[in-house]
Amino acid sequence: TVWSTASLTIWERLFSVIILPIALVFTALFVGSTTMLMQQSTNFARDLAKQRSALTTVARHYKFPPELCVRIRHFIEADKSLRNLREREDRLLKELSPDLQRDLKMQIYGALIARHSFMKFLISRNPPFVRHLCSILGIHDFLAYEFIFNPGDACTVVRFVVDGQLQYMHSYELEESSTINLLVGSSTSRSNAFDGSRVTTPNSESAQGIQLSEQVCRGKCVSEPVLWTLWEHCGELVSLSVGSCALLESDSFEETVKLYPMMMWLSVLYSRQFIIHLNKNFMSDIVEPPDVQEWEPEAIVAVEDEGAALPYEDELPSHCTPQVVKACVLLSQDVAAHGLDENRPHHGFTVIIGEEGALATCGKSGFNPFKGHDVRIITEDGLVCGEAIETLRRNAFHTDGAIVVDGLSGRVVASSWFVGDIRLGGMEGGARSRSARAVAQQAGGCYVIKCSEDSKGKLILHLGTKARVFNSELKTKDVGAPGSCQMAKDSGTTCNAKTSL
Image (cartoon, rainbow, N blue to C red):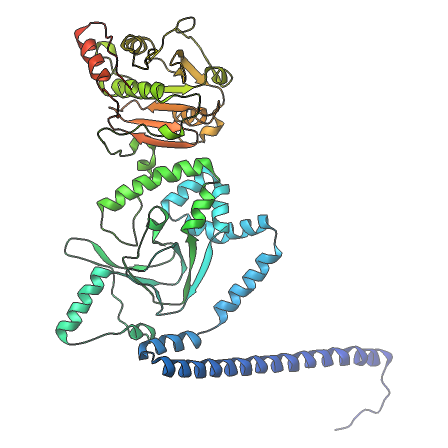
């Protein structure tokens, strides 16, 4: 080989000057990265050895059972990649503004929780609420063959499976498996679940068709009942692979939903139907939610009680007396159950009890047959006035608007009355439902009685942001006005019955 001895050109010298520092930098980066990786590996091995040594010492001192040692060792030796990922996510979130944090978490968890029918319903009604809800979600990463909860454990969170696969087994299934193991002379321990040898059961049902075992995948909701009632886990949840769950704390959910009156109203409606649905079915941590149609106020199943107290009686505003409200409830129940005069059916109605002066600024009446008249639903002695009730039955309940009654005097202020601003009534339901919810929050708070067209006695009662379905016999000192009025109506005579409230 013949080497050239010619001198380098200026461009060759310039190229050498530029390339040499770059090569040195890349070489330094490679050596530094290799050294850092080796140091991290050494530190990891050293930490792992310390943890193993500590486990051995503690296990000997406290005489841990072998299966518990296996579980702890499995957790210690697990891959740390998920933990590092969460640490990076936490650092990123801390750098962002609260508004950006909510947007980011909504992007991550919004589509996931929308798989639940109630959450999907809330997203369609109030996306900012669900955005707020996503911001309070936590995360739980699990390893393969890890026990998430056991039968009888207290429950405080709802779990939405983000990824991975889990196996849920009801306590009845576990008891049957234990019985079979005893009969055949075999035994299993919890450690089997962590060495990968546990045999997972597919979705199975009991002889009565009850789901006892189920594989849980992405988007599935576990332990929803804790949002609506006190709850203990009914079964065992074990992970079959590495994955994670989004966690919604029941206390955090309660605090958040209180900030949104309309979402509070919808949650109350849903919770009542959920509990009824839960009591009718087999108790389990995995519950299919009731149909969306059952959340609507008109579809809610109300329990009938004899001698029930007036709802919200202790919370009535100063401009609404219990006597006036009870008289209106009694009259509304009678019309809902028996219809109008001459056996005409009612077509739904609304009765508003509030302060006459304040309500004057909240709406108006198209045609008011009670203007200039002094028709009072109760007498000076606090008794129901049968004559006034019959006047209302003939002239007020067949109109499209609401009936307005002064809460102190019991004077019928107007009929065919329409709410001016129904924005507080939300977006769901018809105009009558929205108007009832809206006016209940106006004029210092009103007691609103709403009856749907197909009701046979069931009422929806509103006070402020609160609402409930009422289908019980109202407790009074001398119940008899509705029945007496109905008898008079059937006989064609004037009803002057008075009932003590």
